[in-house]
Length: 137
Image (cartoon, rainbow, N blue to C red; front, side, top):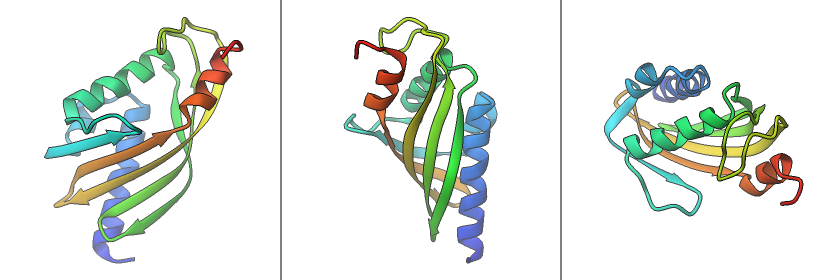
């Protein structure tokens, strides 16, 4: 692994750890000013827009965490494959707290340049997650 790849992996790991601990200011320090995020089929968004969405997820799943199965690193890009796990204790996508535990597949590609995350592309098994919190779904 090159030093650039090792640095990218370290920064991405730090980012997910900070998100899971909900340390938003420290998380923001890892992000480039020209950051963009693409979540599923949504239009690209700025860091502020993306972080707002992430915070809403943690409002609904305050003990949420990323359980990473593996990383693939190529230069400054890091693929993270794993699961988002937590207990649904707050409103999520117009669904009141169910108290149910969830475990939904996630795949992220993060690009690191000059020691900062410049791009975040994410896929979340939202249908699987909704099915776990809403038996009528």
